[in-house]
Image (cartoon, rainbow, N blue to C red):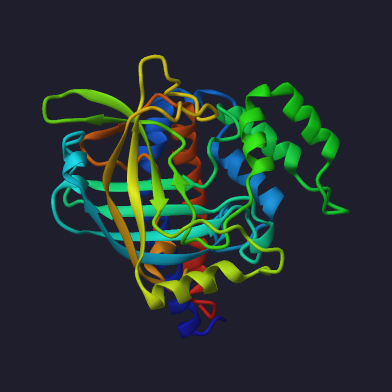
Length: 353
């Protein structure tokens, strides 16, 4: 017979896990509905298949994100410019300081991955603009995305899956994939010419997907945006090591706040607004939309960012998604990953229950 205390703890764990699961499902529902309405879930692919494949590639690490598993929490504020208010009615552009929670990371499913092997840097951001005006974004340091469609990204993940014995990727599978997908050329060219930065603080972070901003007159404009570091770029050195990024950023923040300029790029007629593999011409007009200031950083296990799903479709009134099919897919996959890890975290926090 089980001890009454054991039964009580088990019931409590089931209750806590149930609450976490309910929260995760309520959080995921809007994203799943959008994915369905966008037609993405009508294909044979599902968010669960994507997340399963990410686990095949990066290993299953309970309680961690299935991609960008290694990172740190950051916080600070965003100060918008008057120019931004002329482009969108979003509350995040109202005058004043808006609190920010974020997460800096490298790609991959291994929370112990090597920083010096990471090809890019990433930033998830949550800006509090008040009621109905929360803005979440997931940004990468690459100039473009590797593929334009969700099903092609899934095929790329399959081609990248390591051999279970050697642990290495099959170069022939990857070569065959790239030959079938000429749209990957821009990303591969960027990757071949780019040396990753030596710090999260001097990295540029790009939205890659486009969105639609609506102003007070109801005028709509397609935009992409970038966070431009106010620290000068420095290339990663060969001897930086496997774990330099978090320690470097915490040291910099302890010395002074780190800043980025939010730069909006406006599309012209004919620019590809639904294809993240194609950059817009550099001569397109840009707008300085404000300054992001990060003044605190700490471990992700205890930080506010741990339980934030940086879903790029959580947008304030005044900003809406474009028709880029990657957006609905990212949202749905992020939701499935979130549901899995928040349930695992509930179990890990009470290991003796």
